[in-house]
Amino acid sequence: MIEWIRFILTALLMIAGLVIFGISTLGVFRFKYAVNRMHAAAMGDTLGVGLCLVGLAVSAPDFFVAAKILMVVIFFWLSAPVSSHLLCRLEIETNERLHKYMTVHEKTLAQEREEKEEEA
Amino acid sequence: MREKPEGLLKWAHAFSAFMNAGDERLDNDLVFSQVRDADQDVYEADSYEQEWAEHEQEEKQEVIERLERWRALKGYRAARRAYALLCVTICMIMIVVLLYTVGSLPAYGDPNHPINNEVSARYIEKGLQETGAVNIVTGMILDYRAFDTLGESTVLFTGAMVVLFLLRADAQSHKYSALAQTMKDSPHSETFYEPHRDVILQKTAMILVPVVLIFGVYVVLNGHLSPGGGFSGGAIMGAGLMLYVTAFGFASIRRFFTYKTYQFVVLIALLTYAMSKCYSFYTGANHIESIIPLGTPGAILSSGLILVLNICVGFVVTCTMYAFYAMFRKGEM
View 1: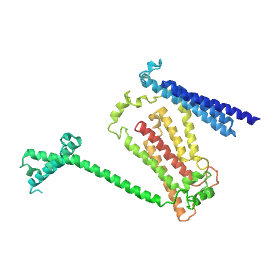
View 2 (view 1 turned 180 degrees about the vertical axis):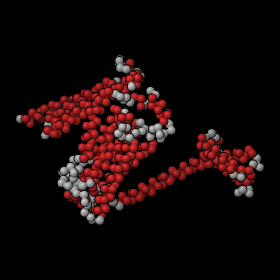
View 3 (view 1 turned 90 degrees about the vertical axis):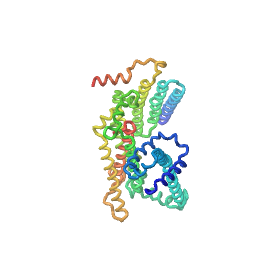
View 4 (view 1 turned 135 degrees about the vertical axis):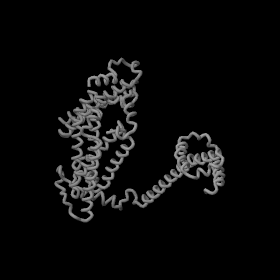
């Protein structure tokens, strides 16, 4: 009985993760603007990977394998948003036609750097 | 030659005119002018010049220029062609020799050749007993084929050295460092948009860097027990160092990892590797019992020299990965 519950849970989580991956791939190709596309890709990197790996962890034979898989999930959730943040920041800094796509309230990198240097 | 300048002059004139037809447009060639400037001193120092002064000035000038132009243009061209020809010849000889050697090797998958029956069977059957490593792959690459792995580590080291030669651009070694500094601060440079004390990145790196480094150490030290070893663990530790640099900048990492550290660590690691393998080759070739115990298979301090060699390879790979990253990103360490 418990084996069946684990199997069904794993299958559901894996299918959900794969659906998320599919949506994110579709978004990467359908969206026109870089930041939108990055949003779609980051969704696959965090939610899709998270669901798939949690599914694997549920079906893992012993506790340590599951713990390792959950460590991988934590690593992905720490690293993927940060890399997305850096890429997005670079896009905002370097795209000269940004105002056509969105409103930006952030300070530019140059202004921020000047402020930091004033502080230091 | 000195007794008959006229003969030489005529010969040189005819020869250069023959060799040089249609090359007038290259008068302002940079190479040509440099060569002429360098050779002017030689001509002035020579007494030959004074003999030539009796002759008509314009003609002399023209002939000299043509001769030198020939040497500067056609001569260089000929040298370049000879160089290319030599390259092709040497490459062809190497190809022929190597193909000949390949032809005398046994056929791929030949069941009667030792590499396909005896060697692999011996690795699998006696690998654990002879090397003490539970992980057969590590036992092969760091015991049976340790010489090959030393070559691989040296290749990594050489690659890092070459990248250093080509890309190093710090204040001591590079004459364009002032220019590089100006370029770095300008908004048109690539480094301007690098993460500059980014808070999100720094906080994440504070969590991730220690974990990544410890995981790398684990992979290196467990190389003889589980999948892993010096190369993969070194790559993980190098990635940790790169993350640290990206988050906190080169000023921070220089507190514990400088160019001197790099040199020291890589040198010591390669020397340790070479010395320990010298010892085991010596004892193995002379059928002497090695004093290094193999230990209990499965324990962390087992399998003789493999642990030491894994640590050495891990250090070399870590330093090389980081050196590549630092060189390509900034040109210094």
